[in-house]
Length: 477
Image (cartoon, rainbow, N blue to C red; front, side, top):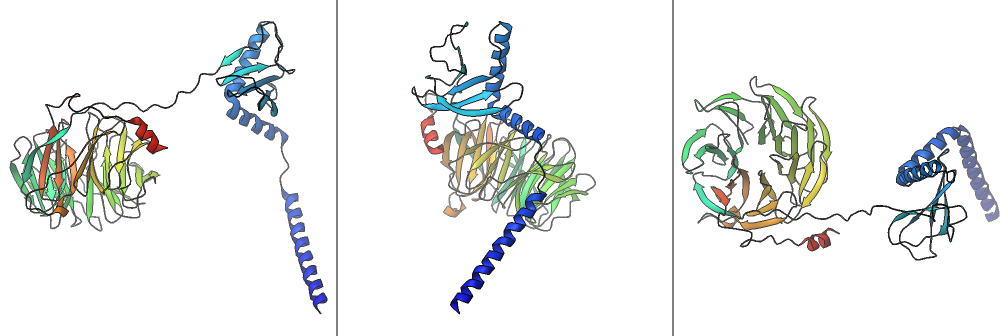
């Protein structure tokens, strides 16, 4: 009985294998035939891509020798040496200019200390001296190791003024284009306008029914725009200090807004995972930018592409085509929520902040430039000025000052808390430089607004640049 079972199992396995074999054979017959011409073209393209520099040199050398009446360049052997000891083997690339074919053989290396191109004859170049006085070495220019540029010296910053007046967490700041006053919005639902020079309160605007999360001042109109957790986006006429337009459309809290610098459009973003583009005058929702899968915490606008950039709690940064209303590029390098994006005022670059890193990007494609590491908290906000200073503020009240170009952290400190406030109220929610870039204004969880300025008495001798690139290299690799 067992023999019968074994025989039937073997028969089944054999049939199964035969069926599989027949299947593969039948499929093989359906494969297209190899086109020799295309295969040759593919090989020549690959050869040009891999050995382009070597082949160009070989062709030039051949032409030079042909012109000088020397040996005709039918087949050339180029040994690529990497400074190895005598007798070790290397790949010898044989190149035929007519067919573009490359074959690799193993041959003893010519001794050399630098990467060089050595012209070799078919018989080998040991002791062979031709009309040109032996095989001449064409030295390749060695690649320089990437150097980390030394950071520029920046004066340290110090606290110059603390402004109190809000009854809730101060969530947003905007400086007026004339640099005379600035506006803040807070958890007490009030927008306050302060004199920049004296720090005195000029005006309070009430109208929001929940926390004000974003403010922006137009450079072309006497308008102030605000948004909040009440889903409202308002346009205030500063000549009458009244709301003249509402932009309805967001389905949840609105966290950020930005004004386009050249055209009359407004960008807002919020907890409904969208960013919206509004026509400032007609109040029309021009585009709804969908694609993020979580709260869009930050939106910025610039005059050149990408005109809109958003950062979201889904850990991505998106670059948008404003005309089409579609996402051009999604940057997925961050591992955690992106809460802040800042444009450099003069360079065609921007930075995005997340608890894992601050990352710098180059527009318009969003090419990654560098990581700036050091924060150990959630980074809520950033600001950059024309002097190359990047500032970031954390949820634990820490402020880090960086050199934009090198990512060198030249100053860090804990923002002093308001007497009577709790330790947990040491967060920085928003920050921005004034129009001159010499004063930094921060909005904090202890209900105060703090103004910082550069220390005039500091010099390179008193506060030297403690630049240790070897530590950076060690950490990087």
